[in-house]
Image (cartoon, rainbow over all chains, first blue to last red; front, side):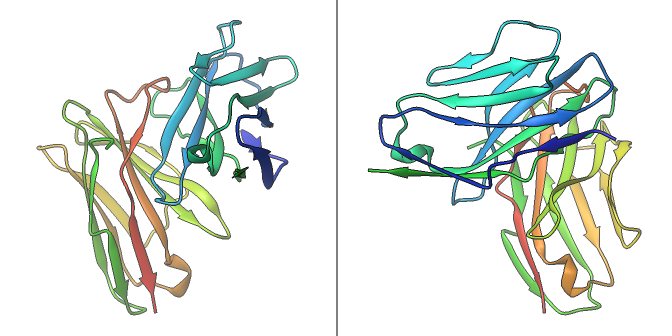
Length: 115
Length: 114
């Protein structure tokens, strides 16, 4: 069974600084998708970034970028120029290629941003 | 605003009761997913529907059932409720059922069982 591990329950970053959230996953598949979702205090799940495993190039969305290491099964999220609005719970998620798939989430990392 | 609408936003009910949670997907999305978020279990996939048909099943209890109607809205029915069913229930939708599609989440329905 596929599993997703986020080893950092909580992280802190100073405003305008950079922070990296870790995620590892376990799968025997060669093709799959990986996602980072943000859950602010409002509780809504918001997609931050998406990565296709068959693409070697790391995905980037404005201040958010990933470091995808397929062999190591690692998918970390880097947030640059952190802002107060980035404070949230961040979930790493894995999606197999099979049709009718199940999105598997990690336990989440709480990110606190200090002003 | 994701475009996914869930009702009710909050619900308090007693053990043994039955409730129905409703989800309207984004316009044009054919696939609907239900997730449960609780403190002890984290975020868990329950079930997926695509264009009215069940497509995938996750950790959904037998006391729970769901369906997707011809207008593509979906309902999650929870019966014989237990204290442990208290959780935030999310609905998400995507254009199709393929794995790479981005799932857009609603704001969730908070269920408290007392």
